[in-house]
Length: 166
Image (cartoon, rainbow, N blue to C red; front, side, top):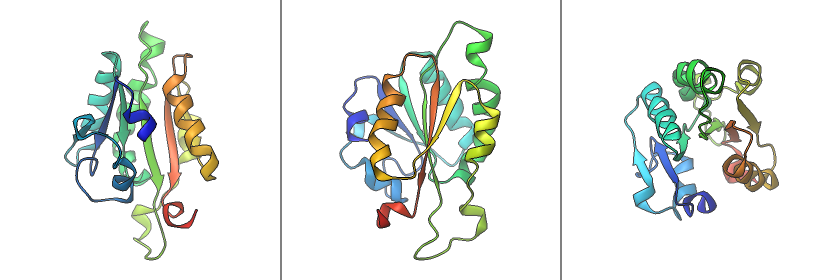
């Protein structure tokens, strides 16, 4: 996130980006507070704003701490962000970041640990879905998401348990 935070055109959007609250918060410690836009719990609106920022030439990093929360933004991702290149000459570059919820040391129950990677890979054609299974995949995936020139946005899936284990 430090790499992305150094780019002039990036902005980090979501819950617990400017204030403590999730494991992802700690990954933003080297990102300037001016680049963090804290959002209320309104996932569909969050992604809609990020889609608009992408259309305006910014590179928003839309952060959902768990897949189960991202599900609430499916409308904006599937029906809007993914379809914009098919309906216009616009090619927004939006980076979406989510996680398969951590089960250790405490299992947060089933509504927090979903992995919908395969379903979203099947639904999306203009948004690439990349699941990170090993630490060495992290930087190349985010670098690709930022530098890509193919007109696609990127949804990067992390594993919550790996923050403490790998």
